[in-house]
Image (cartoon, rainbow, N blue to C red):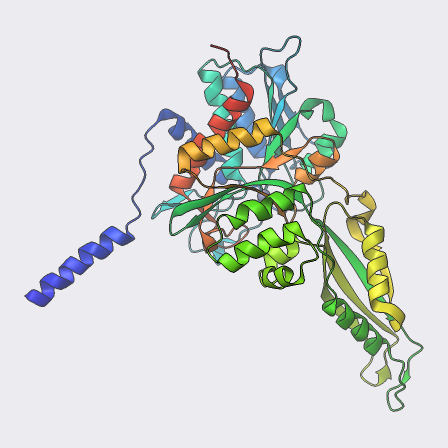
Length: 477
Ligand SMILES: [Zn+2]
């Protein structure tokens, strides 16, 4: 008996600990958000098989029904890509002389492919289980897309008149594909989205043991560039090897790259990232190294400590790494060609020329030729980090404090890429902030069982609602 009751007690304790309470959708605002979210998740917007246009049209119906005039709802479909539609909606502000430029809300509607066979549940159904929303796009990026759309519909219903226009742009092909909507609109329809600055994905909050510890603001991105390394040789019969050999030459060059580390280069965003992160670091040695490297980017000891974390290592500098390898043409012939792809993530104040000439210096006299390939021609390096305006950072910090307590707001630079870079190139400073919090491995966008905490979703809804209102409604009492 005693054993049993102890077991029963343990079971109760465990049940209490493990049960993530289902959060009631208490408000009509939250109900609307869930409805829009569900609608978006359940429209397949995968590049190859889905249609972003369908999602765009479904939302356009909602904006029309909410009373937005037709002239302010733009369904923009590139002629050569009928499934790659984009939506731009303008929420009119008071306007008039001296009205500030609009605020742009940017989110993408396309998602990464998800195969039913790979998932334990249908990726294109909004599932709610154990305190999580699960499904493709629940995190990336239909959470923000549905939140932005809902908040504008909600403001409209409440009759809010902002001091400036608010523009919503929901776009296609952020995840790849032939018709990137953000780039296309910024090039072909800039007048529709021109704004003082934009809010985008790329900035999340971090949880440790369910507790919020930092809230992030993305203000810069690295740029991905590929180089082909090529070694050529006259070749010959493999029975008579010579010291000169295309595969050996390429290997020597790649080993030199593996041993080379680009110098630390900080910009205002990464500097702020290091200083703010140092406040939330559990390891005092890491916290001290973060401060030390800001004081002196050449500090070798600090660099050695920080380099142990692959993300921080990449935040501090340009990185280049071999990602593919090919060579030779027959088992019994000396190789005539050996090639490798070297992928570089260039810090945004750098240039292609600098990176290429640095790599050339590093490989030295190995005879390997380095050529730039891919999107480098678009001139993407140089989209400058966006200096975070005081009004914006102040609002993010105040709302963060109100909602989650005194946790640091950490500006950051993505080591990957978002559509923010196209906006920055078009002269619209862009900041990633969402108020969506994740814990460790939960943050599995692009993966199987993509998910977000239900509480995080509704908190993000409230956070972005308050942020957009703070930045656009400044009615003097
Ligand atoms: Zn995304």
